Length: 447
Image 1: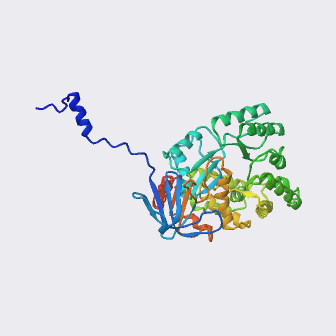
Image 2 (image 1 turned 30 degrees about the horizontal axis):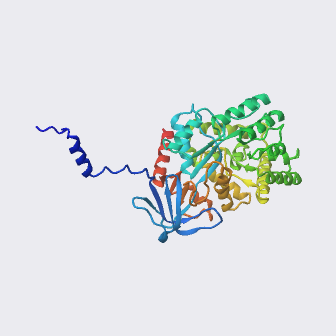
Image 3 (image 1 turned 135 degrees about the horizontal axis):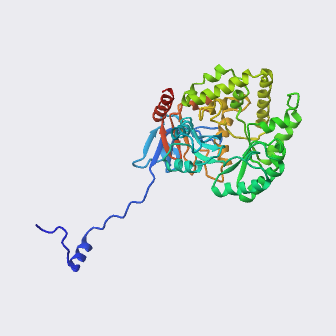
């Protein structure tokens, strides 16, 4: 038997090598391309649609946008036939909660997918906890399906920070750990708040959230707080003891907001449940509750029932409070203040992802057009996070966060409720996959 591994003499080996074809060089890593062909693009750079377009995505970027007949689709690209359907940028939840490390793993993955299933491709997590930065890395790698995450660290409150010195150290620790922003909560005194704000500027980390009562919204704006959640600080500033909005003070604080370039995150829909203005049977009838654990829904029901049945509950006062908050949002919008879409989900009957649809309805009721509402969840979010990445519109170089829809959401925001597919940073989730996963989540809770 001949030795299949015989050794050639050096000269012979050289001759063989000289005439043998060279091994081809390793092919360079090339990101797969997804092509949306024949879509009606809603670029969100202005209030317009562009018909019969091809949008090419490579990796996590949009690499080309152009007319179908003029935009070549590379061989081997995964093609999504648009058939005239509408392609818009993904939406953001700018006051969301991300499960902590001690949450059940399946619940964590389900919550993240609920956002995606509703076209929420970016979440600003506003309840920081252990393990969330690791979870963000898992999402970024594709190991877990979820939205792009920008995370606030554990909150700054009267319970967590007792002195200015503690605030300084907490800011530095969170900046070093890699959190994206600081979360302001209630109970801080002015000296501690100011120490946090000054150190945040030194460390180059932004801060936003609630307005501590002793600090007040005017001082918080002056100190550089970027976002104001829930309109609580505005309400405290403009509503007198008689429960009536002081229009002069409202004009003043709206002007201060605009001058400072601050942002409001209203979370209007949640407050109707929290204040008990919606009957228990109404919120219990929300179909999306089936995607949450039954024990969580039971806790939400108990919360609403407790508010509405309490001796201190005044239905008229609750309705006036909601009306005042709507007036504040109306004034902020009418004056050109910067508004961001957020719902505080998961919270009392605010189911992740699904809650944005109810929030958008309240924003329209406050005088915002569908286009302006969508801006608050797309282009404006891209502007807010402009130091982190480029996203929020459909254009070359933008992160590929996209929603495919049957109808035009500029005509009816309800079109966003049932996406035909969602892309998060270049990862495509077709509608059939979304529907199947939602049904599996609901079934797990029904059991």
